[in-house]
Length: 192
Image (tube, rainbow, N blue to C red; front, top):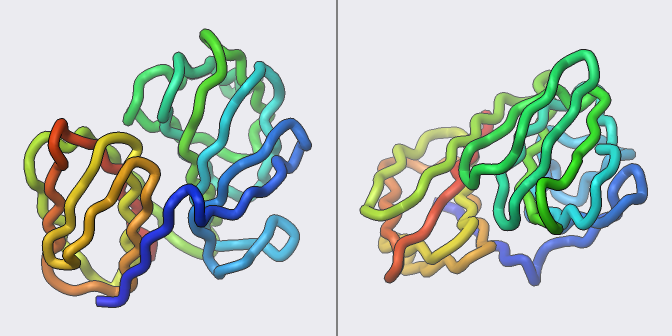
């Protein structure tokens, strides 16, 4: 099964669309795509250092996970409000909605999936990993991100640390993930 590993050191630093900060792009499809060229999906992490507006991304669906810090309150204007304050509890929203983030404490860090529903179907799940799990692989692209802790992948003789991303293209069979000493967590993305 073809696979690659990306760490935060390998990530591409990109400016936010609204100029308010930067993000670390872990993966994008097609590789090298930008907001100007368009993409099917993109995974990144970002430091949110201050309250302020979110960039608008009409036509994209977004999912956020809190990685570190107290999180923030998202205000979508006429579409309501939601808090991103519990690690591994995803928040989904339309990227075209007007959005403002108000920090609940100090700076925080999030994990961000953006997907174009006209080009792909992206499903993100996250969980603490305190015992082994098995992922059934298929023709989808499968990505495993480690928000904290460590994770072993025995079939690949691979150890994933915090902030590592494993990408598997069109795998077959099962992929066993084992928590490292002290446990870990995973965010699993499947894209068709």
